[in-house]
Image (cartoon, rainbow, N blue to C red; front, top):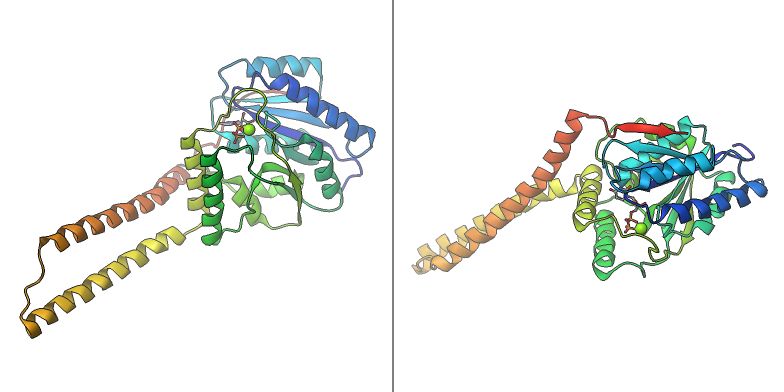
Length: 319
Ligand code: UDP
Ligand code: MG
């Protein structure tokens, strides 16, 4: 491990024109103070990944690249690929640009940037991966809070032990990035992938601030899609549940049929009326469609993986 590693701060951006100037100023100040303390190398840098912004984000990145030569680099995607792919591209390119370790943080700096020092110290003490864990979810709305917590609980139930409240604020070493690049999947759920890699991990706990510029770029649909990616790429339990539900329902129906027959032959009772039939048909059709839906989620994932298209296209890079 180098004494003063080259640190890259990767920042994915989608339409973040309001945030970029203050974010660059803040992060450069943090890098400078860590450099002064000899914790990181002088040539540490920020790498912005423009994830298909339609506002002035890329222009601002270009201007900042000229202003702070070598300290602010940028990658521009050909279109919007989503924050997970922007992070992956940032990690991969940082290593190509000579980084020893990389921290990913959001453009709105909601995560406490003063903790960057703690990440670096833990890395220097031997951790290959340092995960940021948020202390609470005070800044989230009620819907996001409930859905995030139930998602983590559900994932844990499915046997995927991702750390509750770990966001994408983390440090990884260049060795980890090289290992990660052997994972070729299109549907990325980085929290799950880093969890699966093993290696020596450490944790940093931080507070989340409210967003002070721009608006959240996550829609309920993109959050749903991220959650589905997480579930279907790390657990087969829902598929097994389909088999289990099918089997139990047939078994229960068989028992009910049997008891109705016995009742008919022993007590000469007719099989009771149409309500039972309508309710049970409705119930069973519902379960069948649900099961098909679960299978379709996996099939959809498989469809995308089989095509093995490039995960993202980089249009321009400025270094
Ligand atoms: N982001 C991105 N691509 C997307 C959506 C978001 O690069 O398709 C970036 C965004 O610019 C920000 C980070 O991902 O830097 C986290 O997004 P945001 O702050 O909007 O999410 P929230 O904090 O509301 O969960
Ligand atoms: Mg945010």
